[in-house]
Length: 236
Image 1 (spheres, rainbow, N blue to C red):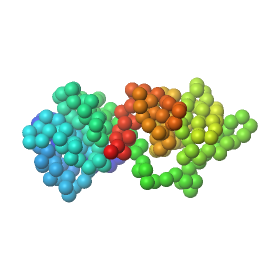
Image 2 (image 1 turned 120 degrees about the horizontal axis):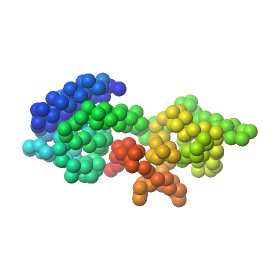
Image 3 (image 1 turned 90 degrees about the vertical axis):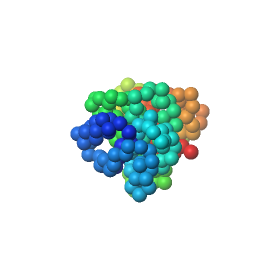
Image 4 (image 1 turned 180 degrees about the vertical axis):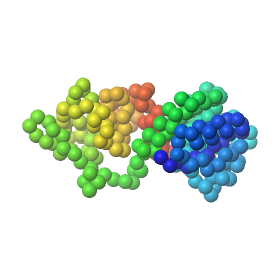
Protein backbone atom coordinates (compact mmCIF):
# COMPACT_ATOMS: atom_id res chain seq x y z
CA UNK A 1 0.00 0.00 0.00
CA UNK A 2 1.33 3.41 -0.98
CA UNK A 3 0.53 5.80 1.89
CA UNK A 4 1.93 9.31 2.29
CA UNK A 5 3.21 9.98 5.80
CA UNK A 6 5.29 12.39 7.85
CA UNK A 7 7.08 12.16 11.19
CA UNK A 8 6.67 14.96 13.74
CA UNK A 9 9.08 14.53 16.66
CA UNK A 10 11.73 16.67 18.32
CA UNK A 11 13.95 13.67 19.21
CA UNK A 12 16.42 12.93 16.34
CA UNK A 13 17.02 9.34 17.46
CA UNK A 14 13.31 8.62 17.52
CA UNK A 15 12.90 10.15 14.06
CA UNK A 16 15.78 8.10 12.68
CA UNK A 17 14.35 4.89 14.11
CA UNK A 18 10.93 5.52 12.63
CA UNK A 19 12.45 6.36 9.26
CA UNK A 20 14.33 3.04 9.26
CA UNK A 21 11.25 1.07 10.32
CA UNK A 22 9.08 2.68 7.66
CA UNK A 23 11.70 2.09 4.99
CA UNK A 24 12.30 -1.53 5.92
CA UNK A 25 8.74 -2.72 6.48
CA UNK A 26 6.45 -0.69 4.18
CA UNK A 27 6.11 0.85 0.74
CA UNK A 28 4.90 4.13 2.20
CA UNK A 29 6.22 7.52 1.11
CA UNK A 30 7.90 9.39 3.96
CA UNK A 31 7.25 12.93 2.77
CA UNK A 32 8.86 14.92 5.59
CA UNK A 33 10.51 14.83 9.03
CA UNK A 34 9.47 17.77 11.19
CA UNK A 35 11.17 18.67 14.46
CA UNK A 36 8.19 20.58 15.85
CA UNK A 37 4.50 21.18 15.29
CA UNK A 38 4.93 24.56 13.57
CA UNK A 39 7.15 23.03 10.88
CA UNK A 40 4.56 20.31 10.39
CA UNK A 41 1.74 22.84 10.01
CA UNK A 42 3.77 24.75 7.42
CA UNK A 43 4.50 21.58 5.44
CA UNK A 44 0.94 20.30 5.54
CA UNK A 45 -0.52 23.52 4.17
CA UNK A 46 0.65 22.57 0.70
CA UNK A 47 1.47 18.89 1.11
CA UNK A 48 -1.48 16.78 2.26
CA UNK A 49 -0.64 13.36 3.69
CA UNK A 50 -2.58 10.28 4.75
CA UNK A 51 -0.82 9.60 8.03
CA UNK A 52 1.12 11.49 10.71
CA UNK A 53 3.47 9.83 13.20
CA UNK A 54 3.15 12.29 16.04
CA UNK A 55 5.12 12.70 19.26
CA UNK A 56 3.24 14.23 22.19
CA UNK A 57 5.78 16.05 24.37
CA UNK A 58 7.23 18.72 22.06
CA UNK A 59 8.16 22.40 22.38
CA UNK A 60 5.96 25.21 21.03
CA UNK A 61 2.88 23.02 20.50
CA UNK A 62 2.28 19.57 21.93
CA UNK A 63 1.28 16.64 19.79
CA UNK A 64 -2.23 16.77 21.23
CA UNK A 65 -2.54 20.44 20.31
CA UNK A 66 -1.33 19.73 16.78
CA UNK A 67 -3.73 16.80 16.44
CA UNK A 68 -6.61 19.17 17.08
CA UNK A 69 -5.48 21.34 14.15
CA UNK A 70 -5.12 18.55 11.59
CA UNK A 71 -7.65 17.80 8.89
CA UNK A 72 -10.17 15.17 9.95
CA UNK A 73 -9.05 13.18 6.89
CA UNK A 74 -5.54 12.81 8.33
CA UNK A 75 -4.94 9.67 10.36
CA UNK A 76 -2.62 9.78 13.38
CA UNK A 77 -0.28 7.34 15.07
CA UNK A 78 1.00 8.79 18.34
CA UNK A 79 4.59 7.92 19.29
CA UNK A 80 5.44 8.71 22.89
CA UNK A 81 7.16 7.52 26.04
CA UNK A 82 4.10 8.39 28.15
CA UNK A 83 1.26 5.92 28.72
CA UNK A 84 -1.03 8.40 30.42
CA UNK A 85 -2.11 10.15 27.19
CA UNK A 86 -3.51 7.00 25.58
CA UNK A 87 -7.19 7.59 26.41
CA UNK A 88 -7.10 11.23 25.29
CA UNK A 89 -5.36 10.29 22.04
CA UNK A 90 -8.43 8.44 20.76
CA UNK A 91 -10.50 11.61 20.79
CA UNK A 92 -8.71 12.33 17.50
CA UNK A 93 -8.52 10.34 14.26
CA UNK A 94 -6.05 7.97 15.91
CA UNK A 95 -5.19 4.54 14.54
CA UNK A 96 -2.55 3.51 17.06
CA UNK A 97 -0.56 4.59 20.11
CA UNK A 98 3.08 3.45 20.07
CA UNK A 99 5.16 3.58 23.23
CA UNK A 100 8.85 4.38 22.90
CA UNK A 101 11.22 2.71 22.44
CA UNK A 102 9.32 1.24 19.49
CA UNK A 103 10.28 -2.34 18.71
CA UNK A 104 10.25 -3.90 15.25
CA UNK A 105 7.56 -6.40 16.32
CA UNK A 106 5.27 -3.67 17.64
CA UNK A 107 5.80 -1.50 14.58
CA UNK A 108 4.93 -4.33 12.20
CA UNK A 109 1.74 -4.95 14.17
CA UNK A 110 0.96 -1.26 13.84
CA UNK A 111 1.52 -1.26 10.07
CA UNK A 112 -1.03 -4.05 9.71
CA UNK A 113 -3.54 -2.08 11.74
CA UNK A 114 -2.85 1.06 9.67
CA UNK A 115 -3.22 -0.69 6.33
CA UNK A 116 -6.38 -2.45 7.50
CA UNK A 117 -7.78 0.93 8.43
CA UNK A 118 -7.17 2.41 4.99
CA UNK A 119 -8.50 -0.71 3.26
CA UNK A 120 -11.64 -0.80 5.39
CA UNK A 121 -12.60 2.86 5.20
CA UNK A 122 -15.21 3.53 2.53
CA UNK A 123 -16.57 7.06 2.02
CA UNK A 124 -20.24 7.39 2.93
CA UNK A 125 -20.94 9.02 -0.43
CA UNK A 126 -20.22 5.78 -2.27
CA UNK A 127 -23.33 3.59 -2.49
CA UNK A 128 -23.60 -0.12 -3.13
CA UNK A 129 -25.71 -1.23 -6.07
CA UNK A 130 -26.09 -4.41 -8.06
CA UNK A 131 -23.78 -3.18 -10.81
CA UNK A 132 -21.02 -3.16 -8.15
CA UNK A 133 -21.80 -6.76 -7.15
CA UNK A 134 -23.92 -5.47 -4.27
CA UNK A 135 -25.67 -8.79 -3.70
CA UNK A 136 -25.08 -12.52 -3.30
CA UNK A 137 -27.06 -15.72 -3.01
CA UNK A 138 -27.02 -17.70 0.24
CA UNK A 139 -27.89 -21.39 0.14
CA UNK A 140 -30.31 -22.24 2.92
CA UNK A 141 -32.08 -25.56 2.91
CA UNK A 142 -33.38 -26.21 -0.61
CA UNK A 143 -33.38 -22.58 -1.73
CA UNK A 144 -30.91 -19.90 -2.82
CA UNK A 145 -31.87 -16.65 -1.11
CA UNK A 146 -30.82 -13.41 -2.78
CA UNK A 147 -29.46 -10.90 -0.26
CA UNK A 148 -28.59 -7.28 -0.97
CA UNK A 149 -25.42 -6.27 0.83
CA UNK A 150 -26.92 -2.90 1.72
CA UNK A 151 -29.76 -4.65 3.58
CA UNK A 152 -27.52 -6.71 5.88
CA UNK A 153 -27.36 -5.60 9.52
CA UNK A 154 -24.83 -8.17 10.67
CA UNK A 155 -23.60 -11.73 10.23
CA UNK A 156 -23.19 -14.05 13.21
CA UNK A 157 -20.93 -17.09 13.23
CA UNK A 158 -22.45 -20.19 14.82
CA UNK A 159 -19.81 -22.94 14.58
CA UNK A 160 -20.11 -24.29 11.00
CA UNK A 161 -23.00 -21.95 10.15
CA UNK A 162 -23.48 -18.22 9.66
CA UNK A 163 -26.69 -16.40 10.44
CA UNK A 164 -27.15 -13.41 8.12
CA UNK A 165 -29.54 -10.84 9.57
CA UNK A 166 -31.30 -8.10 7.60
CA UNK A 167 -34.03 -5.73 8.73
CA UNK A 168 -36.68 -8.06 7.27
CA UNK A 169 -35.43 -11.64 7.59
CA UNK A 170 -32.68 -13.97 8.81
CA UNK A 171 -30.89 -16.68 6.82
CA UNK A 172 -28.84 -19.54 8.24
CA UNK A 173 -26.28 -20.84 5.76
CA UNK A 174 -23.68 -23.60 5.97
CA UNK A 175 -20.56 -21.44 5.84
CA UNK A 176 -17.88 -20.32 8.26
CA UNK A 177 -17.75 -16.67 9.28
CA UNK A 178 -14.18 -16.27 8.05
CA UNK A 179 -15.31 -17.37 4.58
CA UNK A 180 -18.05 -14.74 4.60
CA UNK A 181 -15.59 -12.12 5.84
CA UNK A 182 -13.20 -12.86 2.97
CA UNK A 183 -15.93 -11.94 0.48
CA UNK A 184 -17.15 -8.79 2.19
CA UNK A 185 -15.70 -5.34 1.67
CA UNK A 186 -16.34 -2.10 3.58
CA UNK A 187 -18.66 -0.98 5.09
CA UNK A 188 -18.57 -4.42 6.76
CA UNK A 189 -16.38 -4.53 9.87
CA UNK A 190 -15.44 -7.38 12.20
CA UNK A 191 -16.29 -6.38 15.78
CA UNK A 192 -16.13 -9.75 17.53
CA UNK A 193 -14.95 -13.28 16.82
CA UNK A 194 -18.60 -14.12 16.14
CA UNK A 195 -19.88 -10.94 14.46
CA UNK A 196 -19.36 -8.86 11.31
CA UNK A 197 -21.51 -5.73 11.16
CA UNK A 198 -22.59 -3.31 8.47
CA UNK A 199 -21.41 0.00 9.87
CA UNK A 200 -23.89 1.93 7.71
CA UNK A 201 -26.81 0.19 9.35
CA UNK A 202 -25.87 0.63 13.01
CA UNK A 203 -27.79 3.24 14.97
CA UNK A 204 -25.34 3.91 17.82
CA UNK A 205 -22.34 2.66 19.76
CA UNK A 206 -22.87 2.49 23.50
CA UNK A 207 -21.88 0.38 26.48
CA UNK A 208 -19.33 -1.69 24.60
CA UNK A 209 -21.87 -2.65 21.95
CA UNK A 210 -23.02 -1.57 18.51
CA UNK A 211 -26.78 -1.19 18.25
CA UNK A 212 -29.24 -1.85 15.43
CA UNK A 213 -32.44 -0.48 16.89
CA UNK A 214 -33.29 -2.85 19.73
CA UNK A 215 -30.62 -5.36 18.70
CA UNK A 216 -27.15 -5.01 20.19
CA UNK A 217 -23.88 -6.70 19.27
CA UNK A 218 -20.86 -6.85 21.63
CA UNK A 219 -17.58 -5.28 20.53
CA UNK A 220 -14.55 -7.22 21.77
CA UNK A 221 -11.27 -5.60 22.82
CA UNK A 222 -9.52 -7.35 19.93
CA UNK A 223 -11.50 -5.40 17.30
CA UNK A 224 -12.40 -2.20 19.17
CA UNK A 225 -9.50 -0.05 17.92
CA UNK A 226 -10.19 -0.87 14.28
CA UNK A 227 -13.89 -0.07 14.65
CA UNK A 228 -13.27 3.21 16.47
CA UNK A 229 -10.66 4.28 13.93
CA UNK A 230 -13.33 4.02 11.23
CA UNK A 231 -15.96 5.72 13.37
CA UNK A 232 -13.60 8.59 14.24
CA UNK A 233 -13.41 9.35 10.53
CA UNK A 234 -17.06 10.37 10.69
CA UNK A 235 -17.19 11.88 14.17
CA UNK A 236 -17.97 15.59 14.54
